[in-house]
Image (cartoon, rainbow, N blue to C red):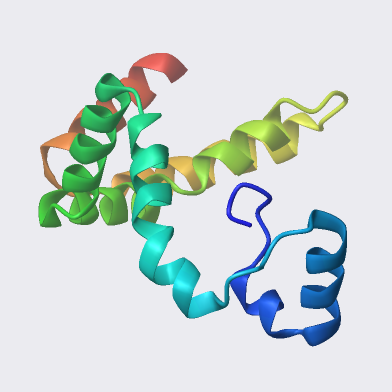
Length: 132
C-alpha cells in the first residue's frame, strides 16, 4: 500500500478494499495497522535515501531562514529594491521610448535614495557610477 502511494484513508472505502483483496489475493490491513507497523519503516527508508551533504545543506538553509537578521535583510531588500526586476525587464524591451526609459530610471533613483544604511549608500553610489 505504501509503495503504491495509496492514501490509507482510501482503505476505509469497502468497494476499494474489496477490489484490492480480489486482485491481490492478500488480506489488506486497515489504516491503524498500517500506521502501527509500516509507517516508521517507511519513514526510515525515505530518510536513508537522503544524501548526507544535501541534508546538511537543508539544515543550514532552515537555520538561515529562521534567523531574525536574515528575515530583516530580506524585508529591507524587498522594500527598497523590489521594483528593480520589473524595471529592468521593461527597460530591456525593444522600441521602448527614451522618454519612458529616463522616467523609469528617475523612479529607480528616487527609490534607491530612500534606502538607508551602509548597504543603501553603497548601492546608490554604484548606481550613480553606472550612469556616469
